[in-house]
Image 1 (cartoon, rainbow, N blue to C red):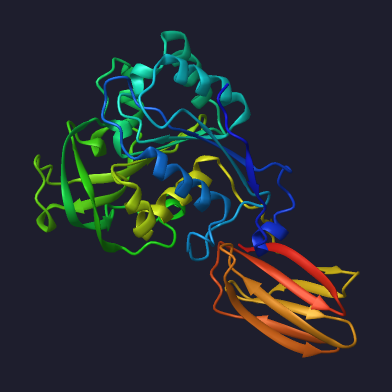
Image 2 (image 1 turned 60 degrees about the vertical axis):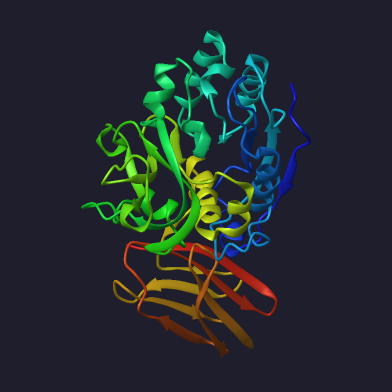
Length: 366
């Protein structure tokens, strides 16, 4: 099997320290780097190092307050970043049992890289909950015959046009309230101008059962060869009883990964989401932590009171699950601190420091 040496990065965010209820295992990612034998080859060799860097150390990729898995992310890669054949697809299938997420990195003619037996193995793998596929750009440009793959993607490339286009967060009724939509679009503006090679598709992915649109293109801001009107460019599937799927038509050139925050952030979010990762959260309860003399209790639907029952100075901090510090209060001796303007049905990470001891807890306001 042609897997490169595995790299590992352990997150040190507040969420990483607090999500102790999760199994002690990282999200295991494998990047598939091969294109079909006669297809166009995108600059995969330059893209893959940037994607690895982003996943292993999102801060180095300038991602602002991303969700960092408690046990980090490992990244392998399979393929030669050029034309290949069914041996490359077989190597990916061999890697599947030890990975949670496959990144289909610009794999034009993806279907031609798998024998019928390996196609079945790939289908069986993604059918299991906890597995996910994250695909971009050329992965939808496929002249192979694999009906299941076309069904998974929900659309097939038909033409492209390069330039700046306005990317809009989808505004269909009910979309913004969906937890999956929120997770994949976290940290992104509702509208932004992005430079890329923009795909049009042979059919309308929005009309495919199970497809949920994340982002669309404003066709008035560029000149597509095949106008779609309603023009989805990123979407996902989130079945409850099997694996997850994400696709974006962006990502033609490695320079877009280097220069486009929207692309980096949405793909990073999609990888974490596709794995099924969720920080461990416990409901707020009125109880005390004897070691540090700390008590947590509700103070109304949008407030939390944290009481410290020890001598000396202390510090109470409230963090969002993205690791961003939202509020803090210092005190001394026996003292209570109430934090207001919190959101019901939202989780927070609480840190209480007293005499060098720390109470770390994830809590949720019901």
